[in-house]
Image: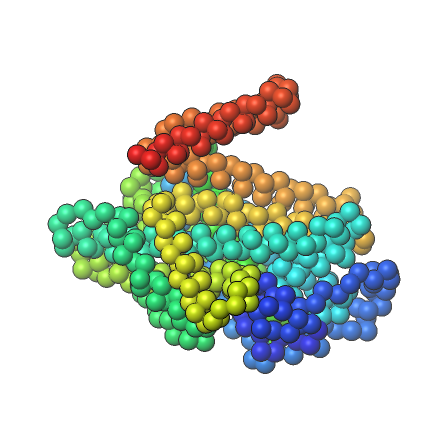
Length: 517
């Protein structure tokens, strides 16, 4: 956070931890202390000081530029999984719930920026990161919330790391799957998926050694071109010989709905880039509003996601794979080129996602040891990249893995935390007639909790089933039964604690036995 604009601030700096250890001025991110009169004088401050007029950005972006960046951030690899999500939800229910998920995800981002604009005026700053907004909202909120300000910052940073670390691992699986299909076609025999993932280790480490975002920009441009071509050719395959959508299930299996929500949240959620985009705008007040940049961008994204999900599921029906490019006929040269283009595009995009994780880890370890810092940085880069690859080797599946990240990380960052941040930010101002804002935040918070718990549970069960770990599913179901007893008051506290401990112990033992064999 800065009191003098965002000059010389990189995009990642605006939402990564910045306590002074990252080479920037410590004062740049200093949180304004809670003043006894800060809230009392808030209205006077708002009329006498305009954060948008005071903001200084070295290379500000126009509304059109920001819209382009928002579309680029939202139309990521998650779009490839939308037909698979529709397979889980059913055709009609998929369309309805895509719109619903888009509305609630967009509202979460809207709320975050709205709270940031309120806090700019309260503590007289011109820009904040996601973590700053969370910390300052709690620090300047009601008395009961203030002790949790640091916890909120840590939670946001940890959530961002987990989300982007998991995304890097999913990207590794997607790359290997696309290359693997083409290789198997020409080799004539099955290629071990885990070995295919391991073969990406050295190229990904070399990619991670790119020193900064400036030199990564050309790689990202190549990724955009490859992904655009890949999606264009994919649409070509989807529009031929279509059947009737009414022949498909209109409502899917209710058990698979959590996976639909998790995948859709993963695909649509752009909460990590919202504040960087707003911080770089020449007219940040245009980011929100009925016809603001955010609503325009997410409206377009929603239509594209519905279009691809609808066509992909209609074309491949029950054969729809976790990534739509995997359904394309491998024997055709055009389809092979699509798989290679998408694989290369995801490979190039890996670097941008990886930089988020790197900045967080590097800020934590830099200067801790008296060694050559350049050597240490490259060691950290290599180890972190290897960790993402090892996770992909351990869980080489796209659909459930992608859903797990969406359920656990993006539900927390995009739904639960924005609801809490808005509540504490406007606690003293009130929540409108009949406290409708508070009730709205309760609904948003509960939806986030349900998406997190149910999506995580079903994703874990699907991962276990994918690799034949039936006993682990039984143990997870046992824990689920315990949770049911808790909510319905059918067991004592001692019985519940003992049952959870027993089920968790059995699950751990089963996993260790599987690992040993």
